Length: 256
Ligand SMILES: NC(=O)c1ccc[n+]([C@@H]2O[C@H](COP(=O)([O-])OP(=O)(O)OC[C@H]3O[C@@H](n4cnc5c(N)ncnc54)[C@H](OP(=O)(O)O)[C@@H]3O)[C@@H](O)[C@H]2O)c1
Image 1 (cartoon, rainbow, N blue to C red):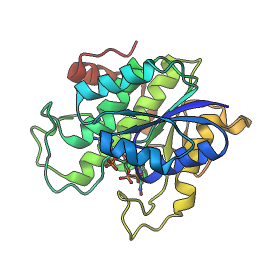
Image 2: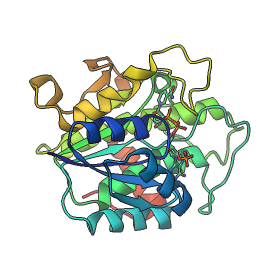
Image 3: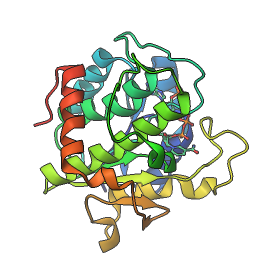
Image 4: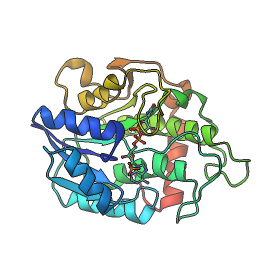
């Protein structure tokens, strides 16, 4: 039995992955943005008894999520699943003055990776849209360029792959991978999504606990339990390091 922490379990792929892992007999620590959503997550995943709360758009609350998780003891795997979507028509500033996509999709996984006691495996939810992400990492906070919601999302999903690969390189004892779940009909994906919903959550769950050789790799990008080629910039060590440095600048937290 593995102990797995998943962010964003009140809905979508996080909830489905938590249900699947629970049914397989693993212990899943849930996460939700608020007390209300935490109750809903517990009701949706009856095999789980533990939930931590915190809004991942807030640096302060994300730190608190890490504290809560560390108070529960060591984990085997962390799935950085929570995310916000790709069609936001305007720049919504968080309490830290950052665009919500960058805060939730990029900084939150960075902060949680840096602060949660190192697990054996890390999984980062990316997207096929990461292929359109901006590898220059210019203006991460969208202060100087006109807002484009889909670009902000794509950038953040490239950041998730960069983060997964940076961690794989820096922490060789940890298996760290990124996942593209496909375009699936969750709250984020919307009803027009064309990919198979039932395949969307399986890869993240498999990478968290799978014992077959294919699941026990590191620094890879997966789609439906198979390796797929990520954006070439994701393997660029200099870009990876620049992203880590930028995240440290925004949060004051160092990834050791
Ligand atoms: N669906 C797709 O087609 C698709 C495609 C490519 C990649 N992905 C990626 O897959 C992951 C899961 O997406 P999904 O489709 O399952 O989306 P979803 O149905 O919208 O669920 C997202 C989850 O993240 C949580 N969340 C969002 N913002 C949060 C915040 N500020 N603080 C705490 N929790 C927050 C949500 O909580 P609430 O329910 O309370 O809002 C929800 O539990 C994301 O990283 C996404 O980028 C999805």
